[in-house]
Amino acid sequence: MTVQVTASKGGIPHNTIMAYGLVGSIVCLYLTYLNQYLSVEYAALFGGLAAVFALIWGTDTIKHLCSYGIGTGVPSAGMIAFGSGVIAMLLATADVFNSMFLSPIMAVVFGAIIGGVAGWLANNVMRMNIPVMVRSLTEMAIIGAIVLMGFTAVMAGGFGFEALSAREIAILGPLAMKNFEFTVLGGCLVAVSFMLGSIALQHPFNACLGPGEKQDRTLMLAAECGFLSMIPVAVISFAFVGIGAAVLSLIVAVAGWYYTYARFLELSKRDAFAWLDAKPILEPKGED
Amino acid sequence: MTAIAAKPSASEGINPVASVIGIVIIIAAVAIAAVFANFALAALIGVIIGGLLIGFGVHFVPVGGAPAAMGQSPGIATGVAMLAAGAGLAGLFGGAWAAANPAFGIAIVIAAGAIGGGLLMAVTCLMVNIVYIFGMGIPAASGKVAKDPITGDSQAEYKSQGTEGHGLPFISYVGGVIGGMLGGAGGTLIYYELLQVYAAKLPELFSATAADVLPVAVSLAGIFAVGMFLMNAVLAAYNITGTIEGPHDPKFKRFPRAVIGCAVASAVAGLFAVLIVVV
Image (cartoon, rainbow over all chains, first blue to last red; front, side, top):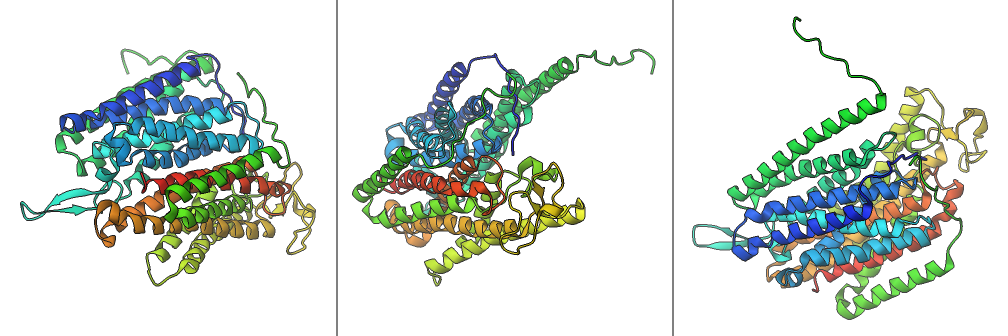
């Protein structure tokens, strides 16, 4: 399959977007630690914002990588990002890292290792010889890990391995027992966030590529997809965090989605108008 | 920027230096596992074998991409990674079902996974040919060989001009089923080996009974298997760069690179996956 990929030039440089995405998402992931620090659950929503930051960055990375015509289509890039990201993210949630407030940093470190190896393999062993391959796959594994960690934080309010896999359930008042089935890991909700995240990552550039692709429109679609994925994640969080925190996450997700969707529609109309080089058909005013 | 700065100049043949470095990485990963997670050493080797089975199996799967949707190349009209993921996940369901039954040993579990993956590819290939032949009215013909290596039927008379062939010739169909079986078996091997590690280690980590933590063990092994499956499938797809007809396609000869690459990727990912019960 040879796909001619057309990507726009100019706009914000990729390094700038990467810096904002990386710093923004790590700051947001650290803000979710407020939950542990203050013993509240309202900070869970920052996980979703971390995912949105990372998805915007990831869309620009996919744009860079896929502008080389890798021959496998854009979605495969999203699949390898999350395939390697989920492994890095789960190792980073280990309690030893979480108790030292290191999980977000370790997700970046492990993601960089596994993504770097995958990129090196693709370039050297598979002999693809694409200049941005190693860097792009490294970035994308980090992005996959951050997005999954962010969604996990929205669902569970934090990301300790033990907290994700065991939950105290009260039975008969004071009696409590540990349950492993009705948890984020036991219910395999990681798989749900995997699909929600990877589709949100691979869709925006795939949908916007072609003649007339504009960076601001593609990135706005990425943010829209991120908030859209955050909505079901926030709904799932009703099962794990308090109702107040879950409603707060849901409101933020819906509001964010509405704003970015409206902006995306606006930008689409702008670009369609520019592309057609035609004047809009004016609505007849007055009598009808 | 219009299309693209530079079309990648994917070279043929094996890169010896990179392959040796890759093998060193595998040995390093196994050595780290031997020191820090000795109980998982066999499992890590199983994961590496599973990964290279996936990488090898993907090369059998006939993928035509967008041209196949227009009847201009043989194969299934989607990307390698998507198709391999479908076969692998179907195999994983079959394997997970068998693994849940304690009476079944590893051989039956792997066989169940292989059948699941092969079945999905058989159904997909059948439906693709029904759409091609009865829907689009074009016969299946290969553009890469003059005669089908299995049936001996000549292909050129049926091939439309200006195309690389169309539909799914018999050899591609057989290749798809073999690829699905290898992929399903590889994914299931990864799942089964990791499940053994987690089922043995998680009870003491959480100080709970084995039955209680089973959901966590199944879920962890499952999501790691899916993650590694997609990694290996995409790396193999990068090796193929786009379309492939099946085992008779010249691109099939590239498979040793993917086998090395997928083994290295699986070694690193598998090491991370077993370390989670150590740290």
